[in-house]
Image 1 (cartoon, rainbow, N blue to C red):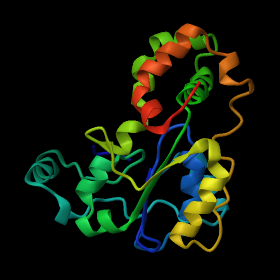
Image 2: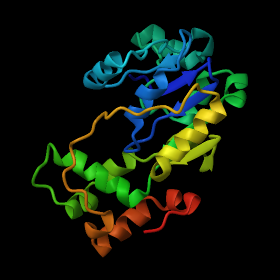
Image 3: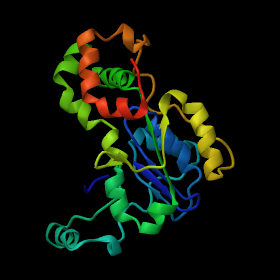
Image 4: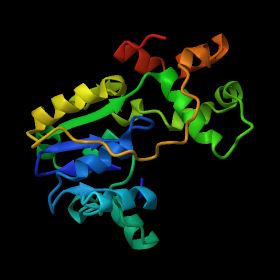
Length: 234
């Protein structure tokens, strides 16, 4: 749990939970533009931090967890292991809820983005392909189940299988969702997303042209909860 993104804005009273392969880094950069001095902004990669600086947005700040939120176990790890608790990248709702006040959790607008699981897996595959150029998509899906499960978003915005955020926005409707979120939060304009972590995927074919029936079935099983809750169809 001790680690290195999420954004917690006291200025606009929102908590953004970052899921994987949903333009999360670009969203973080865009949203950090509206953060104030007290807001929590967790670190991203050095390359993406450079983009954030060039755009004049706030960088990482206020990441350490306040000591007032420590349990006895947390204090034990702090004293004997020298480990300090921090807000970190891809931090989930369960942990965030533990380290903010009940008033903040109940009052602030909590949101994240989710993506069609089959499309998401294909996107993840092309990300991995940069370092494993001979890996086929079927082998990635067949042997990469653990990897894909680690990159799921469902556990990040649920507790005990129940959705605990106020909005699970759809990546497929990104532009419209951002407009509605901007209005809901009272932002001065709709956030403009920079092109962070882009350009690694050259093959832009639809996922249905890339996945075999077996691939489809494996993904359907691994992401059954997202599919059921959000009504995704192949």
